Image (cartoon, rainbow, N blue to C red; front, side):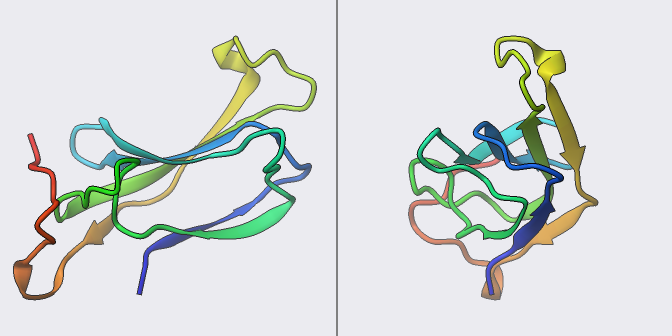
Length: 108
């Protein structure tokens, strides 16, 4: 089963990003999703993650949170205050038998 997040917006957005963040350090480990003008995020959708980063490299087992950034309606995307940011509670990524695929990244 893949971890995922349910995102319910009041209005759709053309600029939504989903990040995987190390729960201990607060460092963004991977940007897992970015909408575009052609791929608008609707009012409510599930999003499931396959365990890998943008390069299809598996991230190490550990504690993480989801960080979701969505551009506000009619806001300027070049300004940080133009985004609403939501962070989920902590969740734990574990691999069976404490193993990770051969293309895993090392955790720093």
